[in-house]
Image (cartoon, rainbow, N blue to C red; front, side, top):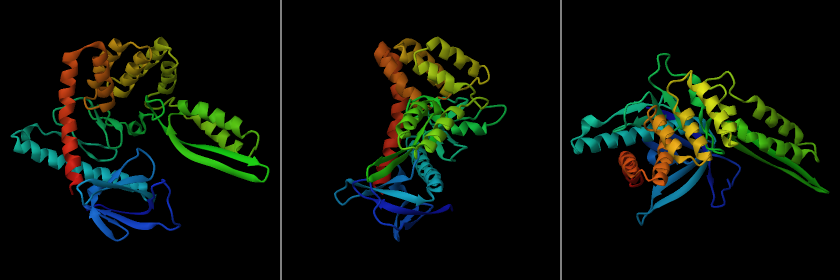
Length: 344
């Protein structure tokens, strides 16, 4: 039985973490203990892709779910994947039982994410060379003669630009001094290096007057330019994404094609090509590209969402209904799992 110990603070309604000292918490199998109070493990869910905030969902007296938030001050990196493993296993078990009751037990199909080891329910999805983990938001090549590339786990959609890239943790820091008043503001952000460059330049010029923030700005500026993926798994992806966002469709596609020459299955790269067509308001070519992308990874939810919007805009009703039917079954199973989890 997997046991994860961590420390946390309660988060108040204003999003602050009152108090100096952290409390003890422990996740053990299906049991969660917070400051001596024992709860079912499925009451705790991660509500951020990165960071230390977790949502606590408990059934209230009136049947409505009560929401609270904790900030994990120590052990968040271990807690999040452990929660993913526990929750996904429970959801998969419920889905398998549901299909067995419907007489469709043989249709159940699952895979394990090699990065976070969550159980992925792939029932009714076509078998494809790649699989998407919606718990850790990574794409994995499961049908590759060379095995699973380890560097693949670092790639995902950038929260800033929405394109498949290699996001990194950056610090945004400003120091100010006004007569007798001085202080600083600092926060962390996850984004691809290309998205960080404008912010890094802004931070450099904003800190020039008071000097103290300049070293931090220079470090982030260097990381945003030195953090490209040249020579890595998808070399040149950063440059291609920049061209796509600037409207240079021909240059972007040419760069993407060079990447695809070395990767026959690459749903993330093909997704970016579809997004590049959308930047030019070319929904028909975007739809064809996204269809091609889903042949690499049939359960890549971001591509399916954008493809549905393209079908709706182009009036391809038959394709839209077929897509909705596939994903409605998946969404219904997820909704039922969440409802049962909230019911305890």
